Length: 150
Image (cartoon, rainbow, N blue to C red; front, side, top):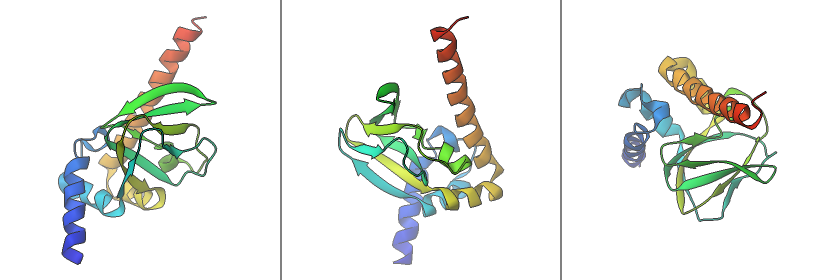
């Protein structure tokens, strides 16, 4: 049983190393993330989580795509290799958007509390989270400037 759990974690670690959040990490540094994570599948149209819900997990898309909705309006489309729910890793808060699978989608789900413990052990992992947050902030700022160029 222990070997099968380790094998599953190793296979998942190989998948995760292609996600930009983990590009600066070695396979040995990604393995603990894989060990605390689980995989889930969603059908097209499934709500993965709703705006206002408690935030306890981060999600990494390994196949498919999702739509990000805020107050019913589409903000973005995310595809394989991208993550969502990463603000839950940084701050205990409620969800700021609703996430809906556009097509059959597979995600890796990582619990906040366990992931936060890993941030202390692996600074490169923390830098990866910061990169994702900065990229999202930059995109939101640029979109805002286009909508209101004053």
